[in-house]
Image (tube, rainbow, N blue to C red; front, side, top):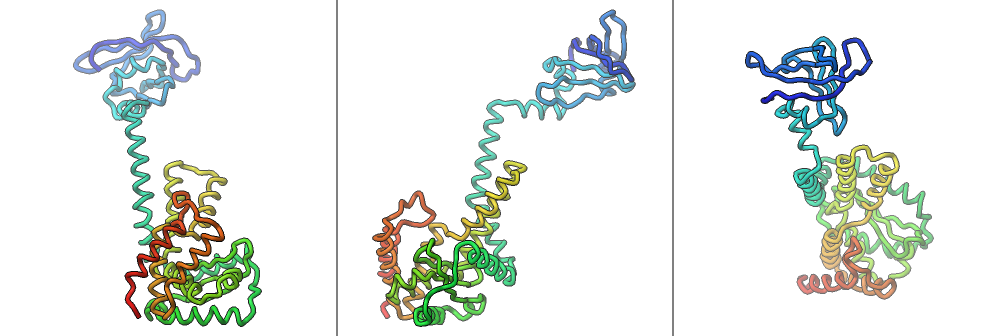
Length: 350
């Protein structure tokens, strides 16, 4: 506080809730800044050094209050004038920073940029750390729980006959056999069959090694090279821990949204948690490409024609059309076919 000034407002005398008009005068005396409350009849109601009064923190446009040691309170809506009392205090500086302006816009963009970088790169790092720290028994429980949910919601017991199942099992055992021993022993690889008409010809792998093939898939593709390519692809997802990484990443995304938005509420919480968990059953483009290459190598080592995976996507493209890549978490069928051709060209000749 430098030059003397006056503020108009109201006074609440000690022990009273009655508000009366008054003004606050400031002055310098003996090197100290003093303030005093003056009634409309010029009677002095309170006097104190500024250092001995309590100045409340600024809160938006609410009136500011000054509380004297004896309990007398002065209140004013003159924020600009009041700033002369606490203009250099920490609370006042914070209040100025909270006001809308270019600095706040810049800070908001910085927060959004930081959140994006955390989502784009940090979540993957945190997910990898979480995967490394997850005990095998927990991953096995994830498999059991997910399979129970799938069986309850969308799957029925398989209607394949034993000959159809055995045909797939023989291919599966042959492909698994060429997997490095440490990878086979690290997981509980199991092949299951389910009737899932709403899903169509499909297969998926759970984090601990449980693989499910639909009846429609077995009956739609009689070519053993196609089945070998699909199984190799799903084994690739398991070995490279794509499912567990996606699950942890989706949970991390929920935590990130909660940090930015505060209390998300029960509806948003359900959407973020359960929706992200369902999305975690699918994989990103890079993971799909990586699993394609893993499956091609594995089926090739098992003695199958790696072109079987290419045939799968060609037939799916004919059946379903080629999806638009930028709208999908998967590469388009056309791009996958081209990538498979390029990768096969680099495989060693048996």
